[in-house]
Length: 338
Ligand code: RAM
Image (cartoon, rainbow, N blue to C red):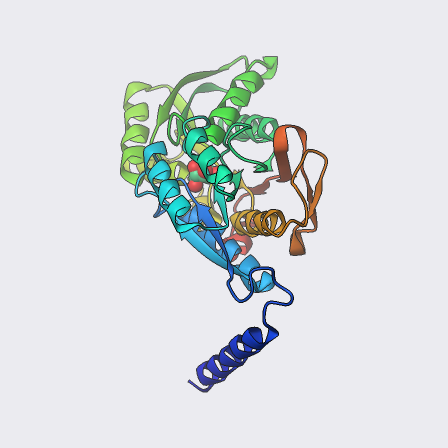
């Protein structure tokens, strides 16, 4: 209680001081910049961690209000409606994890014409529909690594299927293309990628699709699910169907959601990056663009707080780092973080 009171007093003082400062430092006076993180869909733990990163960056920057939004299901239409509203509300910047690489372009162009800075992150919009596209890691590296992870778990044998997010997701589709490339290596000669199915980043549909795969392919040895929603649902489906040990599962999983399945061996190993850092960095990039610190052109270096600097590469694409690989030994440590 006392802490709360102290905090309220401190906040009030800050506000009063802010008023008297009279906008000498901030071009927008005491109006915080409204920076929106527009995600694929709500109810996804991965994006909730992204939102935490946005709030952290906003607190550090001081002049930013971090706003978290997303449609109830992962559709481009839902995102388009939200962007229309954000244009009407005159927010300052939007970072979008896109449900479609191309379908959002007309509305994001409209937003940019209205003076709103637009970037994509996690799942990109094609060049022309945004300035920077911040991706967590090189798509080739992510895709190839997913195949290597399942091959190690299945002893390089048998039929493997992919349980993806939506069929239009920019990020998953890019990774899956690289999975096919990786499978061309002769070391996978006794493995076959039989099918790609889509759980739409909905827990129930992902679960049903995973069960469907196990029924359709009695010889199935593994599932790759490069989505945090899918890999969790598939792990549960494998256990419920009594297929633990017969069907291996890997993917891109959120440690806090997957700890149980990694520790009990249903999921021998999986990968991911830090979603908090993704939301933090996206917010930092937008603030830099909005306040005119940097235009965000190819070759620009953008300062992003505790994450150092990101380089704007070819076609505006910025790459953050390399994924972590989680297993029994390290999952608890990461589960405490995201
Ligand atoms: C899901 C989403 C997101 C993706 C992660 C790995 O949460 O599809 O876009 O990056 O999985």
